[in-house]
Length: 326
Image 1 (cartoon, rainbow, N blue to C red):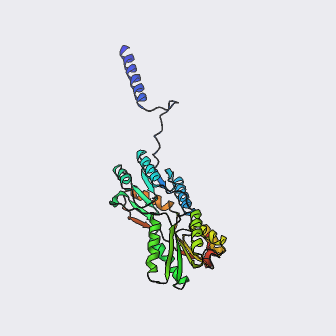
Image 2 (cartoon, rainbow, N blue to C red):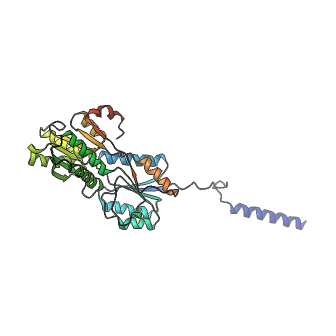
């Protein structure tokens, strides 16, 4: 009898031990396995200086939500120092990927080296950078800003029969789109000796600054202004307001071309105040996260992934405006 009791006790102890080894829920049931870790992405955005920038942010945020990505968003308000601070924070949080829309081209070496040392891939969107080691970033997803400048100049030269006094509203000083859109525009003007940029000044990609700079141009050169080339639509819309207030008939007496093709530009074309805009598509969310998936799967991606752009004129604006998403 004693040996039967002993065997029973050993069996009971063994059962309790096995039960103790298994994780238990508060109700005493076996715990479910932990859910798979969400993909964590840090996104450092330039700011919200234009309708185009807002559309890009909305596209990336919306796609992250759609795919269940943990997106850590930081608005730099146009300041590189704030972007560097955001990237440093992303690295400390050990995100899986960093997406960066850089304010300017230079000054990224140190923080991107830290990201590389932490094995965090960096994907640039809409603006490029200049670094001594291109392995510091994985790829750039953007439009060809130089080509946008060329397209604008070719259209303007044709429209003006190869002769015009041009007033240029540049984007943020030191930024890739400002540098490249000017470069492409000036490349084409070399073929047209009577197409001259009389004055060129930064208006920081904003409508308010576009209006302010245009007002200064009008004050000093009112009778000389024949054409305006703006590096983005928001600056062009500000310039249109200044020209309107000065009674100078934008779109008729002054020919205006800009870049981005936001809905506000189409509204201005329909109203006859903007003559043309070169598209720069901001809806990058799907392409950004498709690229992230490829990188994380170990696939090789091109160093530059180009968005395709086109030019729109007053003549077709009314037919196209209803289909614009931004």
